[in-house]
Image 1 (cartoon, rainbow, N blue to C red):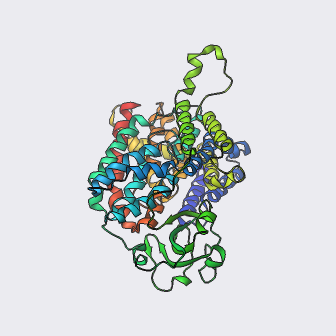
Image 2: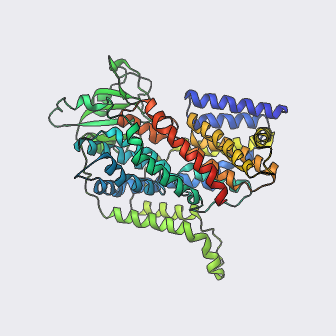
Image 3: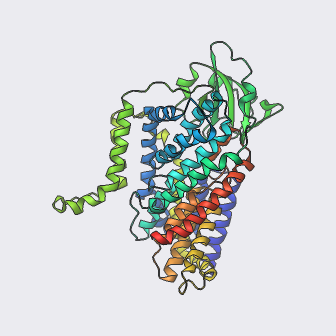
Length: 521
């Protein structure tokens, strides 16, 4: 390796260490890496900021607003409420009723709001049916991940890879490009979640159940609140940060990584994704339900959601039009050549139109719309383009790609070589995504895949598709995907529960991806 390759290698190692240590937000970590590449003249200023104007990144931001509009409409609550059975209930029947629908919804909506809405409802329903909530919540998170790999907009990772693909001069993916293989993976994963996973999941975990026997003071409600990265008391104890003075609620206990903290929890320093059990008055929910200070607020014991309004139908129609438009929009110029359109009718265009109509119809707050966007995720995505470019410019990607090709030295003579290279790309990407964020994992793996394809002179599309699946397939740990962290807090799971159920799921997705991708691409 030359000096530039060694320099980029050092930057990547430091970046990985910083992401794993979780001392800084991922966006700031990646921005620091881009700055260091810029200082060494490995990337130009233009290359450093290209990601901030990429259509894929901007589409992700628009889809946050679309998901918020759907969430505020109440349609998701009504769907899941009508799906949950109330008679002859078993774990298998419950999972069979709602998991396929959850996967379908997650193919078109951001996974996080789906889990934030469904997790507490399913937990309260399971308690009412005298079933262990732990049998349903990890499958809920996994079902959203499986649905997300079936469409271009199912997860931000897919849009990131698509943006990198187009930035490299290749044809972008259409709406259901990933579904050719993703649907088979999703169906196999759902079968595993319904038939096998419940036998591997614990019956109960000690969560907020110990607070159920405590009487709620008159005029108050018992709530679970999950702290987001915007909570102002992070790093402070409850004695230092007066929760009651700030929010008018009394904290009964803290649950961290699925376990209720014992001892003097008042002196424990608060961390993001901690779940607090609180007693609050009726003013708490209206004041803080839509705040970004809390990732989730759940009224303990509540199953049936409040009745919605006509906005449910407005949201449904707008989302359907967006999906249909993004699916067939790019074919319209070929059907009607005389139109002479100057606008590309792609996902970006229809996401723009849907977002504006949702704003005009009051589906989300027009004055506070920026708070519904996860800016750190967007910065992470934008910086990922610069890091990917730096790995290519320095020759570091070519160096690593050479080793991947050496693993399949007979690639040009044997069909087995393609499977070996896909497996190598998949494993590298998946290891990254289990340790760091899925978008950063895709950014690091993309230049490796591109370099492998260019050195062999073959179509890189199978490698790009492989990265999409591998970067999303975070099942073995709770830290790789935010939905896993949410259900860990709600369900009281241990870290080992994810490994026990997630490792077989990882193997299923890995095998199906590696063997099916060459058949379709």
